[in-house]
Each structure stands twice: as structure tokens, then as C-alpha cells.
Length: 165
Image (tube, rainbow, N blue to C red; front, side):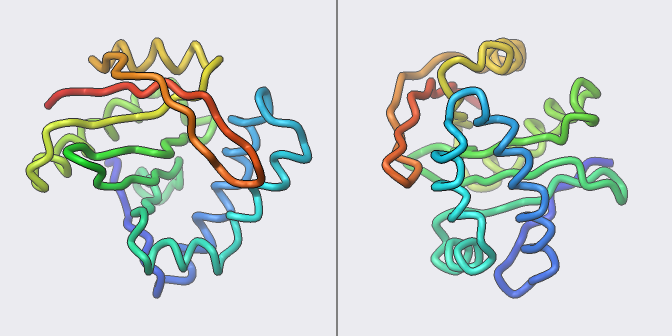
């Protein structure tokens, strides 16, 4: 059974698990669009103290994705305007194409509905064509294009996809 485990600032072991899983997944995702130096600049934000501060300030909610005892990925979400904004959604490579993504979307739909939110939004970095097609197959549609600052003088060109609930 897939479950989302919220990472709280007081749960240091969960914070460590989050950072351990986040670094290689972000490196894999961004390696085709960022230089090594640019990735090093943004990896500054993957420090325990920074993650704990973001959790305390309630900028984002972080979740580990588990299936039974297996850690299969992580999420970073935020209530933004009238939507649940999924700013990071990563599944470890060996667990992809096994139906986990759609199960996680179903859990996020339930979470949004409990919060009286009627939209899920997901940013996808320009050039990640395989990811676009996955979200389209789940019922998402293109909402808009966006430019997002991610730190270290780095801006990402993204497409924001929306799923109306």
C-alpha cells in the first residue's frame, strides 16, 4: 500500500531520509538542463538546516513516499492560491512504470478535497517530454508557461499542468 509520510522538522530521521533520497533524484532530473556548477549552487538548499527551516516556516510540506517498508520517492507540496501545488514529485528509477505515480495522484486528490481545493498543479521543466505525456495521460492539461528562480542565479522554464478535481 502506497502512503505519504509527512516530514516534520522535529523528525530528524525523516529529514535525513528526505535529503538522502532528494539529492540523487534532483541530480538525475536536472542533469540534462543544468551544468555541474549550477547543480552545486542549488544543492546548497539540500542541507538539513535549510530543509528544517523550510518546514518550520511552512513554505512547503515534504512527504516521503513509501510502499510498505520501501522508500520509493518524495513530494514537496504547497497550498498556493486555490490549488495544491506539487513543486517536486520524484520516484526512484527502479520503482517507475509500476503504477505508483497514479496512486500518488489519487492520494493528492483526496488531500486537496479535504482542504476544499479543486485543482492540482504540477510544474514540468521545459524539455522533459516523457513527463509531459505521463501527466497528460492522467488527465492534466497545460495551464501556462512560467519562469521560476531556483537559487544560485538559475531560472527554470517550466510548463504548469493542472488537473481540475
